[in-house]
Length: 243
Ligand SMILES: [Zn+2]
Image (cartoon, rainbow, N blue to C red; front, side):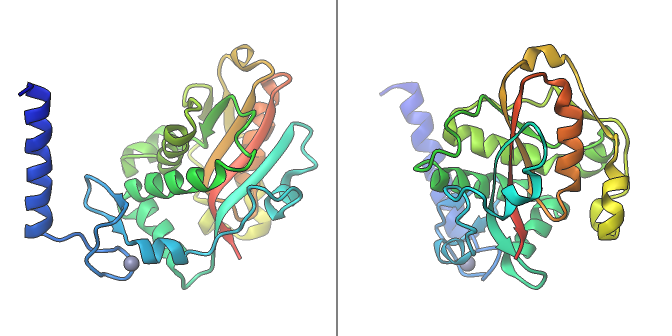
């Protein structure tokens, strides 16, 4: 018997024992679940709830609502969100959970699911690199993670497209967009992003990734900074958008 086999047997036994002692509950409906979306941090989404989240069906749809928001940008290529949400709803609770309640693994899991559902379409076909919208270092320290980075990792693990957190940075710790009125959001993010070594992304197709797209101001501010990536094409993806 090999050492690796023994240690994997041990891990599986420990996991089963853990499941018996503290059964995993779905974060939305509370039922005990053996979820496909299960992670070390102990958060789970049961298959029924996962299935019921409302899809936007945008991956294969050209000229969809997300694309309508950005098509005037000269470098813009494709856009899609995975789910619709409204205020009192499941997706909104999930977004809150992974953004403010230290459960970024949920964002990762949802991104895995999004990528699996997008794979049969051509959405990822020509993408060279996945780039999460960065947090300011101070905000990163406060929160302990960047949820968009988890989303980028989830997409990357399914599509095998590399993700990059080096080339795009946030210069200013602006007030959170959620706290700013719609028509002032563009000003709140104006000029806050910067790029490093733009020559390294010459003519690449970059997929810019965030948790939600509401007015699109944050994405647009990133895309403005990314004009420095000469000849680059930019697509956008978010887990959710308002219905
Ligand atoms: Zn559930």
